[in-house]
Amino acid sequence: MTANGRVALLVVALVAAPAAAETPGPMAVTREVLTRSNAIVTGPGEHRQKVETLNALLRPFLDTEAMGRRAMGKHLDGRSPAQVRAFLDVFRELFLRTYVQRLLLFEVPDFGFKGEKIDGDEATVETEIITPKDRFAVDYTMRRSTGAWRATDILVEDASLGDNFRSQFDAALAKEPFDSLMARLRKKVAGPAEPEL
Amino acid sequence: MRAVFLKDLLIALRDRTAVFISLVVPIFVISVIAAALHSDETPMIRVPVVNEDQGPVAGTFIKLLRDHAIVDEVDRTEAEVLVRDRNKVAAAIVFPEGLSKAYLQGRTAEILLLTDPARVGEVQQVKVLLLLMDKRAAALADPLAEERLSLKETSLTGNRADPDSFEQTVPGYSLMFVLLAVIFGTAVAMHDERGWGTLPRLLVAPAGFTWMLLGKLGVRYLVGVVQMLVLLVFGHVAFGVSLGPSSLALVLLVLAMVFPVVGLGMVVAGLAGTREQTLPLGLAFVLTFSCLGGLWWPPWVTPEWMQKISSIVFTTWAMQGMQDLMLRDRGLDALPVTVTILAAYGVAFTALGLALFRARHSAR
Image (cartoon, rainbow over all chains, first blue to last red; front, side):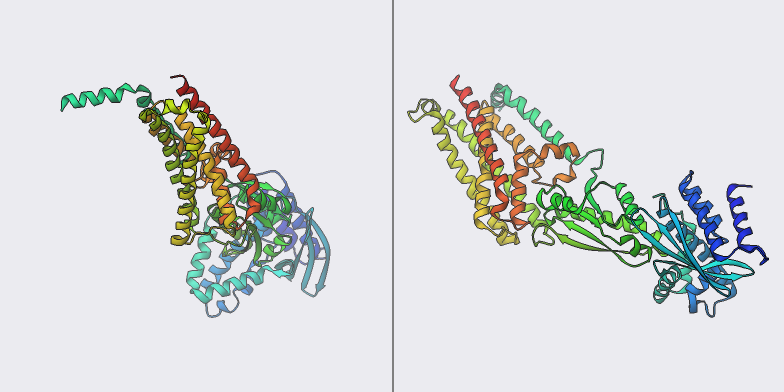
């Protein structure tokens, strides 16, 4: 089994374990994922390899299906199940890529964990990325489903990544049909990831 | 016909120095121009960057810029001095505080560009760099890779936002034609004295040979000054080229810039042994000083080693003086250093030319 596979399995075990007595809470899940992210970002290895490892780590942590449905909103109404599935698949790859690239912007990210607010199956985990000059507030909106906590939105300095996607999809679909936007998204996902910065 | 051909051939070959110069000089000039335009290395533009953000996004932008430019990280004061006071660079980029947060939030982030519009070509190049940087970085900020930067441009050198192409070319070509007219006029006039048989009289004139020559140079100087002023006024009337806020400053600058041109004409007269030699020698000086001085193209398009040579050439200083007045809207305050340097070149060239001419013809 590859290192990526082991990492992915570990996270899956963390977030998808049955809601038994020792189910990790939203803060614990987030802390585990971010700590491992930090190790990957600051550790040795090629940029591309880091991207792949981070993708594997974050895939089970991010509920991209919920994010995608929220981002596309009413534009999914009336679409066939196949179209919706196709969009959610491409959105998952797009969101992962965007989030990973942002994470990699911070060369030596130092994560701070401020607290968690749990309200039933909903929660918010407040974290921050600490740089030598500044602190960047990053809040994770979490939801528990099938016993595991997963992130359904990420707010950077109070700006929602989901809303950011949504506003861009709204703007794009005001100018072009759904199929055209899908073609652009597929092309972007199929293309090479951004080169190392 | 054959006899005339042979006679003229013998006459042409008699002045072997002229033949030699007419072959060597074009090779030299062609080499200089070829080196200026066909360098193997693409010259990288130098861009000072002020990183007030100190965040991950500004850091990434700087990395991206380094792929295409020589980036110097400086503080804002130093950036302003480099652009406004020393005219060392065309533009400086400021990544303001809070840029990273705005960018990561998906908001449009503002970048400040401090510019010297007198160097419009270089400013455009910096803008292209920023566009490239924005396109590459946009993928990090949003899914559809839309540009997220807005550019706020601030001119540090006057109110001219965007000089047109006439304001780049008219001063340069005017100076080149003054170089042509004055250098050839001066050098040929000196050799005409010999051809007319009046040179020996000048050499023993009671007023002194040097003073007689200076009198002759005075005429060439006056012609050069008038020609330069007429060409600039024509450019102003015909093409709307600015002459700057101060007519006095313009006249003073023209007086200063024609002085070394006349001196250079005297150097050519001193170097040329015959009237025929003045043509290739004069052309070599005109073309080389035009090329190096940025009369045809801005110096930044040339290789770095050539830019270093350009920085000490008097035509570069003349062009900088004209840009200070016409494109940077400066007046007399811009002239002390430029005029002093041009005058120093004028004195040096004239003294050298007189010495060469005197040595060559006194010995005969």
